[in-house]
Image (tube, rainbow, N blue to C red; front, top):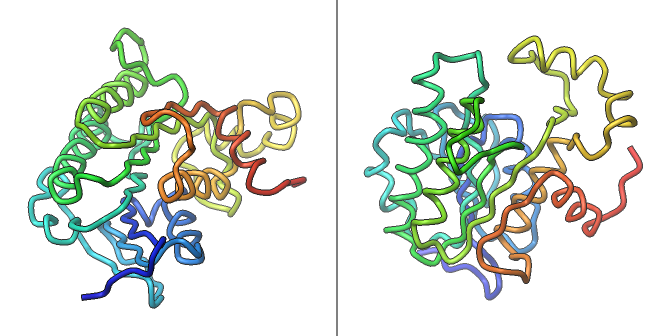
Length: 235
């Protein structure tokens, strides 16, 4: 059995083939405090690294088969999700709420001391009163995670996530934001976040904690402040 060095952590990342999840994997593999990265997703990452263990799992409606893989984990970074308008409403809720809760249930049973870092979204509404389905579903998931008994839950609520690397945007809204990003960043600096910076924040807080209360909601401005504490960025 591979025993991590003192102070090093075992990290599981879900949604590693996505925009934020991909950066999270790359950053975690370089992180000096991470001993092992277990990436779980529906597609191969196409990379190889001594720290990386990759598992293909296609049905997140049932994560029971992941019991052994999720044992002895120190933290999870959960980035699996879908965009509004890209999938039907029922599937959006299933991916956002059901898949997250099912994974968290199995992780909680296998690694009860693990921290949970969740990619939520700006406007997430745990009260369920929002007119936006995305906000209701993210809020419902947040509420469920906080009730599951994890020692630490970190709820990340980014605003517009700038992809950094060129990609095919999921909808017209993201296309427009991509085109106007330089001006948007200058006019509304508190409403943007780089995908790579967001990934770094999610990994760092999962591995090192924040030194604050056990469960914490991180709005876009909080994530930006956290990033500035890592290193200055001018671009």
